Image (cartoon, rainbow, N blue to C red):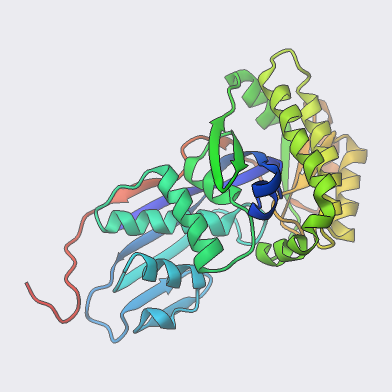
Length: 336
């Protein structure tokens, strides 16, 4: 039996510039972090006592005799890609899916990690990220960028650069005290709305070439934000102000990025004292993030009293196999 734990990610700057259509021409970069909310993938070989060959438990339960019958595209394609058979897979998570936290990519990374471990193979974080991107973007043909898979696999607070079909992960060097202050100044709220990221991305991709100016400006903000984080003499509150500037630009890159309800919540947070913020992920719903100085947080909490606040802490581990028990697998119909 194998259990993997994979963190969810929080994207701050550069979202949209991680799309190949954009970064292969202009370059791209994002700043993101993973935090202490996770998805867990439990995988083992299914004992040969059932009339089905694979059992999957996620938001629904599937029991099938053939891999091609699996409805969940990511599981089906991953099993075919790695030649997996006779499995029982269980997915659990600390936070709901389709909420802007890269949950589908965290699941893809965690699942691939579990499959390799079940085969008795070690794969490094780079390979896990690469194959999760290939799984979601090529095998499943889902629209979207590359940052989620990379963040989930590597973990930590990073700048990720994209160019010419490649990427590099650069950890952001910041003192523990400054990093804690950043963490303490962020407030995360669940809006209650969920959506499919790929649908939002498709609406954005259609207009990508019309929004090049906004994306280039968002890319430039990545450099500014990195300087704010790494320069101990810089005003950390500028991070919040840059979040606001970047969010207003992002809303111009797709008609489904925000909604009237979300805009109303966001402005309410600013009026209560937040310096900036954004909707996490592709847009359309999910989690709303605010940057708020400590003395203003009570006012923002009152303004957001109808939403669920989610406390969190940054994490640095990325994907991990947290339980590993090797087992002997004998394909059905074969004997020792």
